[in-house]
Image (tube, rainbow, N blue to C red; front, side):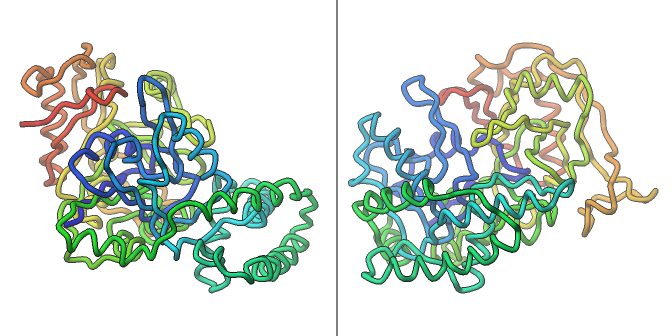
Length: 421
């Protein structure tokens, strides 16, 4: 069977640590969507490691890691990641596999991303400029190049054909930046990529399932950034929800068992777009400081606010969430009062539904107040020992969502996870 771990907010929920925590119980960890705009932070031998494309099970001995066909892959970023992972003694030839159908991010995709974002002026969507959007556009436009194409002797001709098309688009943007260095690095790293394990991903993973192996599908970004169900157009370019597992790995829906959703004890967002509970005040700044809320990939300061149960309930619904992990509970340790968004006020009408176009409707959050626990929770390893006010906070969220928080992360370390029993 296949279990899924994915984010329930706007990304940055701490999925990397949680996948790393659960990975020991699985034979395969597989990424099913996204690209190098994702940053999954792990601590290995007390060192901080940020993975962008490699699955978060890579540091566990004996676990197979698959980059699925739903991912868009930047070979340059992958090479840098591989060098970092190999420095810890990990044998990538042994436990990293890449699906043939995985689309490649070309240097001109990065250029197009940058050109398009610059052209938007004040209406920027907050792209990470990694080329993800243009690559997915080529995928749906049936123009893209895939990892399996690297093994074709006509790859360079196919590349030049697509590059020529991209150049016409860049000319329309009046984009004149020289990307020769990007291209040189790209072709150098392709030789490295060809030495890795390139497999027929859907057969590869289904064979693992048939042989009784447990699979953990790892998502990137968060549910509120889903191309269909997120805060469009301020979204990513892939399906970040559990439905994306099937198309992103080539597995059937009935094979999915548990959907483990990750949420912070509060809420953050990177980049532009609606964020109803955002706190543009001292409290928001305090959350940012205590939570070290800066993007793992870009370093950008994250926008911070109180937890949004309207959005969280929506994410649980569309994903079919069966278990919840709450991360960064310790960040709230010093707050005397907490607030929880339970409804939206849209033009004077109270609602528990996500509006079709949140940017236009501009929902105002309706809050319920809670007393903070105002004590250090980071060293606690038993649910019974958690402050009663923290338990009140958790129980209210459980009752609202109809799904239970099963684990609470109270620090960055692997051991800082409290199981709710």
